[in-house]
Figure 1 (spheres, rainbow, N blue to C red):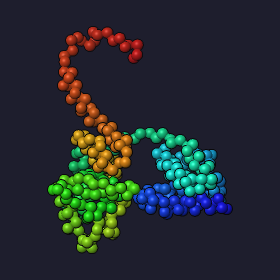
Figure 2 (cartoon, rainbow, N blue to C red):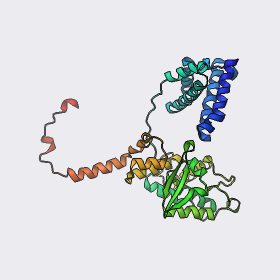
Figure 3 (cartoon, rainbow, N blue to C red):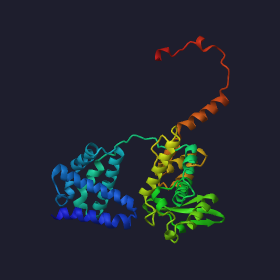
Figure 4 (tube, rainbow, N blue to C red):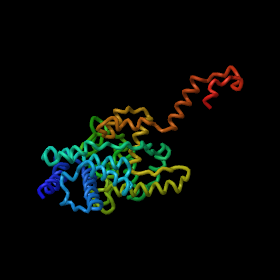
Length: 337
């Protein structure tokens, strides 16, 4: 019973104290960690008929944890990426547990270290074209207060490449002018804040939005409010995107073929910055990536841009008339056809 208590007590301290206070992780990240352990306990109950208080650190050996990861993929149809996220949460907790009770957690820690990260297929990130962005931002009816707010919100997301949660957390004090230049402070993952420049037009849109808010939210510290809550939620932003995506598809059937989400706007902004010549280190700073490897994903520019640049290069350097009829030239590579 003591070993069981050690596991549950360690997990409680890890979730309730270590992650928010010591690590400073966001509520969304902590929710993801909680979900991992709920699934772990569900797995033990479904497969081994064990309740949480019957599970000890020694239960978390290689065979059980490997079976758990396989269960996630087979029974829940989780992707390799999701499976790897669950493993990452287990790894973090195992490191924490071992640092506090080496003898109890050594089996758990060794098991996690033996489990490989599964290679996930690389998915091309969906991005809007510049024309689609222009249309998307023109859809809100600015004569209606809620629609006007939506236009400012969507414009802000494209201007700053902010995450949806960062938009929700934006306060009036996060908007500033320094030496005649305009900035916003975005509060990202892990409580990390970063300063992102905006242009004068975006700055004025934000101020105008704040000054013309509904009376009940006129003194709110949050820049964006929902119709029912002082602080905008991520789910509310998702609904805004769904609304205008449907509207866009109805009006422009040959465009908006992707399944666009709020995060698509972030990918789109980053991609368009890259196409416009903004360097990877600068984009990394704007996006708030801790590793430049994450930002390098955006270096995989869209195929249309590649085709255009190669075509221009070919036309400039290879605009030479052929000296012979191609049909008369012997193909030395026939054997490869």
